[in-house]
Image (cartoon, rainbow over all chains, first blue to last red; front, side, top):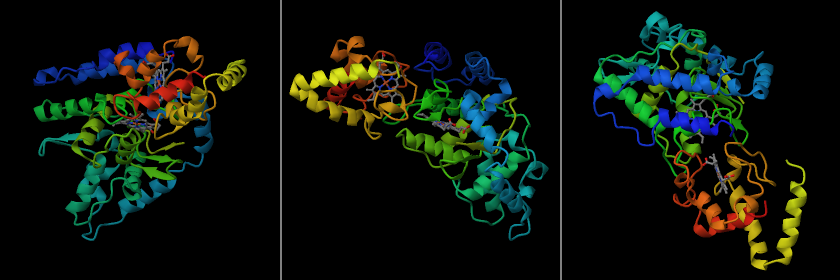
Length: 283
Length: 114
């Protein structure tokens, strides 16, 4: 509450109630957005060290952080990392492996996802790339919200820990349109309760929704995938987006819908320069 | 919880019993609507005496009669707070048909006991 008014003022600068539609490509300015976004979070939460934003709700709440440190000796996502590692090592029926689909055999590359693919003109997230890899090798795709996908991404994130996000928005109108669409999705209110993603993760980080501490939008993608005690298991980025939409009585999209991929592109670009922290554990 | 709030609330309840019977009868309904997760779910964001596990996105709702002497104004906040503050995160309960006008009135009755 103390912060509310300064937050609201910053919000108006960041996201005008009626953002001008980006009709022309030159209206899209990711670098200026990046600076305004970063300034907003580092000023509003001046005591939080920049790299700590990748720890989501823990960066906002000392009490929660203590509980986290207590469990982190036996991280509950370890089983998923182990399983993902095994899956990575096991060849498909055609003898190829996941590693064959990725740069550097898939090790230490999480920080480059999602990226803009200039062949297809679309945003490729890590989850999408994994299923495309399976399909290209004659295997059925996995559910985006279940354990197999979470295990694969947990392993890939684990091998990338500490690497700095490095998302590029090439000077291609399709890449800029995807970025702008992700940004629009993030700040647009929807559903009966009239929330945007920003209502919770920009206007209210550190505040409590019931007992949950809201994570800041800066670095919010860095910990994915996450183990949540409340889920009693792992959750992918897809699962989290669907959950945030349904909990606010908005109609969730299909996992890996273009809007979801674009919002992930937008948020991960905003995390550029911050370290990969996933997989992570949440209360 | 501020000291003295309990006593004040008890006083209001006692008065309620001796005042207009309808208002007294409505109080529990308003509380149920305010606390129900499928209805007001006000505790998600507001601390209200008598409710469990409140959030703190909005201010605690206490001392309401003094702070909102005009009940129309209080109902208007619940109906659609975006009219007062376009940037608010408080859902527009009336405008978006989450609560009917009658339900909002009964929540106002309840809030006046807090």
